[in-house]
Every structure is written in structure tokens, then in C-alpha cells.
Length: 173
Image (tube, rainbow, N blue to C red):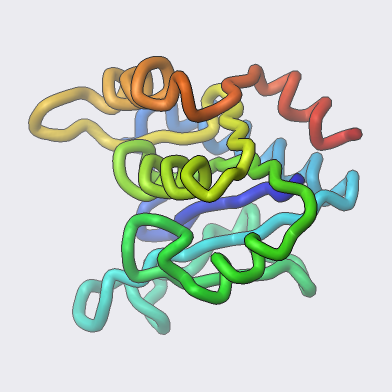
């Protein structure tokens, strides 16, 4: 199994995210459990391009301090929503024998959704722990409605939804 941590960047991790405290506690808990049990953790950062305020060299682009990658942990940069848009990550994952991806991070309705669908299309078993993806309110739905819509409806046939306890147990095996 690989724990794929998506867009946990200073410019996105904000208290306005739906269920901010639960989301940040659970993502931190899973990263800690993966590290403790020698499960590979891969970080992906979104580069919105020059002048966006969220590109290489910008403070907002950096991964939040509380989960900063450790020496030896892989970090990939993407410029589109799906993590599979990074050809090096796509190539690396394609050649892994374990096809289980636990995906956590931001934002539910953008990069997480695109990555979940891309992973599923490529034959990965996608695991989504409860409360480990989030987003902001938008013009059409609250963050809560958006998170519930994707987790409980859109991805219903694509992912294995698990509790945080089940996710930790999976990382301990």
C-alpha cells in the first residue's frame, strides 16, 4: 500500500475547510501511522503556475510544516488536477506490485476527485478513509455537502470507504 498525500500545501490548508480540525488531525494521524509501519508516503503538490502565488518558490506552495516530508519520501509536482498528470509519478506507480492507494488531502471536488478516478481507471484499489479529504464552500454547495456528495455518491463504486480506525489498521499490516 502507498499513502498518497495530495496538495497539503500552505496555500490550501485553511480553517475555512470543511471539518478542518478533524481533517487535519486524521491526515496527520495516517501519515504518522504509515511512517511508523514503513508504509510508503508520497506527497504531491499542485503548481498553479507563475504569478498564481502557488508555484515553486512561493510560501503557499510549500507542504504544511506539521507533515513535512521526511528525507527519502517522494515528492511530486503536478500542474493539473489528477496526480497522474505527473508522468514520473504515473510511471513510478505503474511499476509497483502493490496496487493499493490510500488517498488523502485536498480538495475533494478537484484534485482528489480527479486522482481517484484516474487511479481507478488504471486498476488501482483506491481506499478513502473517512474525514481525510476536504474542501471549501463554493457557489453551489457547502464544503460539507460537497464532501458528502463525492464520498457517499460519486465514488461509491470506485473506492473502498473505511473508517479512520480501519485505515490505521490497514497501515499496520
